[in-house]
Image (cartoon, rainbow over the protein chains, first blue to last red):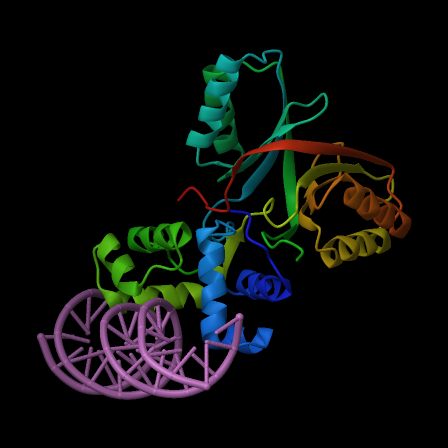
Length: 153
Length: 153
DNA sequence: CCTGAAAGTTGCTAGCC
DNA sequence: GGCTAGCAACTTTCAGG
């Protein structure tokens, strides 16, 4: 299952990350190979799940998503049932772009993208009415300095 | 500049977000239109910058990026020169996947993706030797519960 | 494992409703 | 503005070195 990734594979991944709309020919040229081998490698990596979803990055502000919050959550409950409910709540809400369980005194961090502060409040009220959390701190982003999904290959 | 986005445009954007590898025909069918109008709309939104980069999501863990940190930064310096240096440092480091300037007592938050805790320390040491920061808290992700770039259209 | 070529799809353009 | 038709370009497959 754990496919071996060599230097050529990494070059292909880097090229795809940078621009997934490129043609096979272009990628082949830029990694110094030709179509078929590159295609076989891509296929293999797709099947292995190394290459996942293909998507486009949209301009959040142009589409009316002008507020971005990072939410730090502390909870007193750690039993399986509570956690299941909490995870389900996060996964089912589209406003939640990221959710991580943390080590340390803060238990979870969320990245929440919404139209405005009011929409955040709506989200927040809905969340805390669904699952009990001990302490919540919301950090409001004023400026997105950098945002990328690319891994530093 | 500010292109008007109607319901059909939003459907197209949602389809592209979900799978940018789809053919025009498939998108056209799913939004209830046909190739040319869909293509014209996509072209317009690309030119307006609403549709940005096309990319693939890679499996970070399979590629050896097993550690993800959220870094909370407080600074005492707020002059333009310091800020310029700081922004440049963040933008030039590929480990930094996200960087936001915040409102409130924490000034910046970063999302940093690295191979392991040692690699994070290397990054951290390099950063603080380049720019002076007052206080840094690193939150280590134990589990990525959710991760998406899709906007909740 | 790579090369080259063939076949089926698709992206993109142009001309008509 | 949308639809139909067409060509060029692409992806994908496969035989052969």
